[in-house]
Image (cartoon, rainbow, N blue to C red; front, side, top):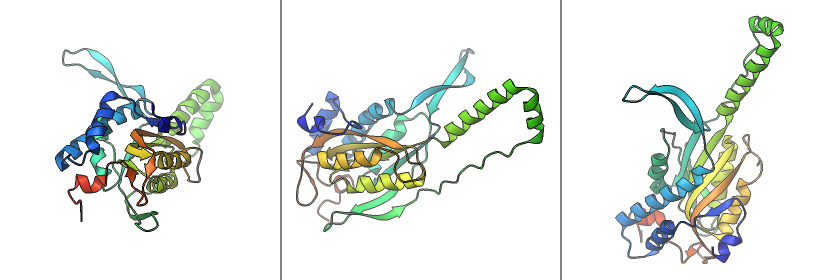
Length: 268
């Protein structure tokens, strides 16, 4: 583990997988063409995503099903039941398919458009298609059920516990934020703040490369309850870390502009 990795907050996780490190080294090269850049970003996101989701989703028993041989078995599915994928445009699009591949069921993909002002290096939002979160109305007390409940306290307790569990599952919302680069951290912080305001209860950021400064800023924003309706906390999972940022806010040695490399707009 590098000295940069050891100086990061505890909710930042840098991959130690040999294949991730080797692929990251290939991605750094100026000789890597657009097609290989896309492949490497996808593969790195897939490997880091495996590590990130291992600790941030759980398995639970579902309904009964039948195998092709006619044997019955209990299905298994993921908790939380509400998971959303949020790529930061443009370069985050290169990581979407990897996360979709990992998850056993389709999930909604919501896009955030943020760019960094070249002078101030501050993030500017230009697109946001996060749907509005509506609070679920609490069920009104029913006179019939109340009467039954009074006659059977144990039934009331069991019913209440089941209702609370279902409500908890519905309200728990995991947001997976993907962006290849976390340099100054400004864009990641702005995106995390937006997700907190949206009402998610947990945020997992998956990146390819970050700086110590940027990862630390994003980790601080992830940590704690926050100011949004959902509050929540989160973690950052990254393939590698660079210690330096140049005067343009670019990582050194870094990967260059990943969006330009993915979409062949280098030198625009």
